Length: 115
Length: 113
Image (tube, rainbow over all chains, first blue to last red; front, side):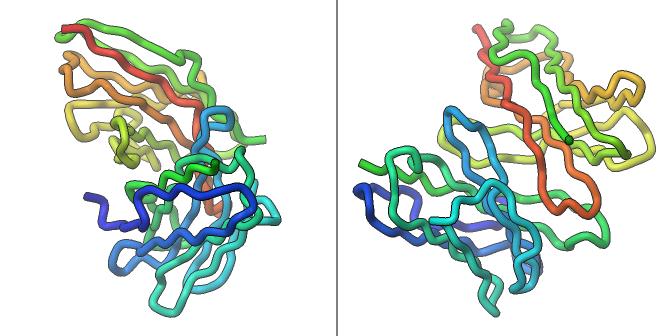
């Protein structure tokens, strides 16, 4: 158990809909990262937050957005869903951002299926 | 641009045999290197990491990896594979200030009884 929790575990929805994925980082970790794992794209970095502020953006679509709240949990919002958004979405957390390098601890993921 | 290559998509070994999974990276500065394992339906678990120092790194579950700067490689090894090692293995590179990992495409390991 990495200490990172993600809810829900599974999500099934229809095209055009909007969903919210939630992540709670390990106790004390200030950085949260979101990744998408799909069969055709592999594991892709989406976005990172550090202590409530966006720090880095990767291959995140404009239909997707995220935020990190004062209690450090994070939410990834996916809107106008398309079939191709079906994937496993991972959240990871780490202790620091930029000052030194620390490994990331991954949650169990949320499997999103868009029908 | 930073990249990570795992040349072997699938590897099959017999239980008790030795294992080596290859990872090559491309990065201009000293990279921070990681190996993660993903069991079916599970998240990613860190096996080992290389930040600096001794180029032979020991990890959990009996795995080790060797950083070879001249070959831009960070291959994962295990002297004797167990059936429970069947999983997908990901190599990743990170660099100070970039805040993210770049993952390889993964190597799926199958273990024959």
